[in-house]
Length: 244
Image (cartoon, rainbow, N blue to C red):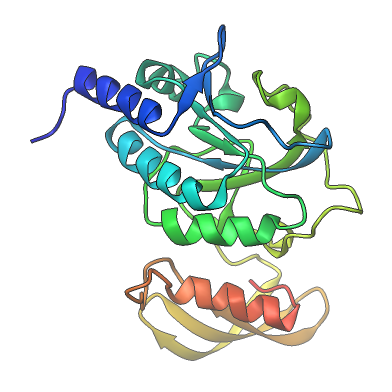
């Protein structure tokens, strides 16, 4: 039987107490009972999104995982605040930011991979200012302010780009397409199987023939949650070549 909104709010409050996560005074955020370890004012940060119906499930999963990894993080402090956030009451830039993780800046990709493994099948509202990791549904990341963001609403500079001395995230360099760019002329469908396949195309800009491989989420999925699109991204990163 589904819980009503009041029950969800009570259970969420009890969950935060169970894991010693408490709200800061005059803040919409709750924090763990250990100090922040942020040293730089700029770097990568990660957001996990949630909606009313799965907030407790996602929070419990994250807080359980955190017992092992001790992330530097903040989480929305109540269900009413989550609803207001997702409706844009705190500004459009805050929509979807249920949990904010400030990862070790030398292990950002490792942290993203870990969180993607545990959360990529969960549903969340889109974080418009961020990039969805591997085009997943609720793990997002961006480069921006860290120290100024810990206790406050993030006053982001959307033009802020990663500095040269931060960890490079392969996913960050990938271009996202909803359809095939017009620069490619399809010559032959080499292989097609379900929503994945391999195409031979002509790049109209370079006048060279190229191989295009494509795949969709959830196709040929394993019990561990790895699907054909994950394998495509992994293969691309090994080749160190962009793909379409």
